[in-house]
Length: 208
Image 1 (cartoon, helix red, strand yellow):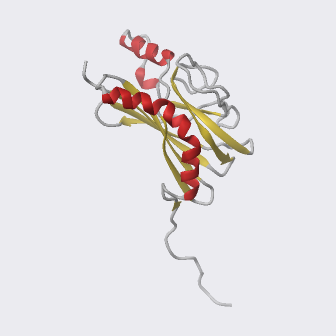
Image 2: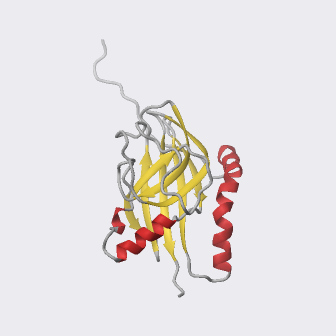
Image 3: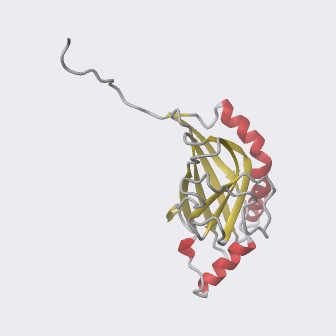
C-alpha cells in the first residue's frame, strides 16, 4: 500500500459567459420590449435635461455548474405611486427609507404600472426562508444613486421561471410598500442549484 494522500491541484474558477455570448444575446433580444418600455422615457428626460428619478435592474444568473450569465440591465421600470408616497412619508418621519432593501421575485408577466402595489405572482415557499424576501445589501451607487443587491436561491419548486422583481420595505411577502416593479423575459432557475443576483439602483438627478 502506498503511503501519503492524493489530492487535486489547481484553481477553481467560475465559468463566466461573455455578455455577447449567443445565449445572452438571444435572451437580450427577447427581453428588449421590456427594456424599451422604460428606456425611451429615460432617453427623453435626458435629452431635454429634465429632472427625474429612474429605477434600473441588473441581473446575473449563477448556475449550479459554475456558469455565470451576466444579463446586464434588464429594465428601467417602474417606480410606483406607492413608492413615491413612501418617499414623501419618509420626509414626514412616518416611514424609513433605509427599509427599502427587501427584494421580491415572482413569475407574473403583466406589464408594470404605476399603480402596482405588489408583484403579480410572488414566490412563497420557494424562498430559502419560506415567505421571506431576500435582504439586500445597501450602498451608494454614485452621485444621486441608491443601490441594493440581493440574491435569490430557490430551494424548492423545480425549475422556476422568474419574470418579475420588486423592492419592498419589509421581508415578509405578506405585504409591504412596493417602491419599484420590473418585468423581464423568463430566467429559468433550477431549485437548490441556481441563483439570481439582482442589483437595483434608483437615481435622482439634480436640476430643479
